Image 1 (cartoon, rainbow, N blue to C red):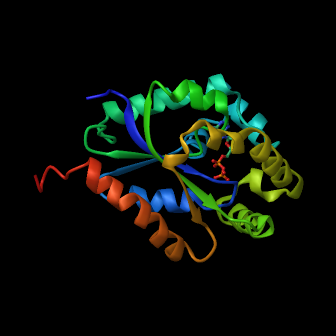
Image 2 (cartoon, rainbow, N blue to C red):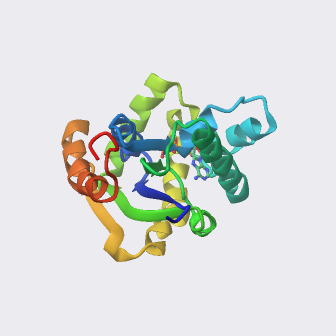
Length: 206
Ligand code: ADP
């Protein structure tokens, strides 16, 4: 067996709902959800890496690639050592990484990407509205300020959107991200459930 993690990438603009869908999927046995933004936010913000994260995210910018990939590798290693993530049994749901083509290239030797799920919300106003609501609920500085939100969209279009072109078209699937979380979830499950069924068997049912 390949020692690369088999995974599904959740892809989409800020506010498209990657985190919401990823968290729900992460509760289903056999899926393991990891959001890069959550890992950054869980850092000690007085540590050097935590300070770097604050410096970039508060401006709506991406943390430099090398730091991001290194932190991701360490976090994945820790999750595996602690058996929170069991690569032979769990399908990894990655959210918020890779966010640049440099990151995608660096992750290639660690990931076997089975599917890229692109959550598409054509209405940027709606996404900004979601982000402002989240800012109030989750106390997120990067979502509170109009200027920072706009910057995040610019960065998304310039640096992150091209990542879609890095993967074969045959594994990239678009899911409309408009509607309630439950409606979007139905469409997401339509795509990911057959994949889980095909690649992973629950050892209890074997
Ligand atoms: P959202 O869910 O709104 O798209 P995230 O929680 O994923 O936002 O990310 C918040 C911030 O964390 C980003 O704006 C960025 O500064 C930093 N960040 C998260 N993931 C990455 C990444 N893969 N590369 C660089 N920076 C990242």
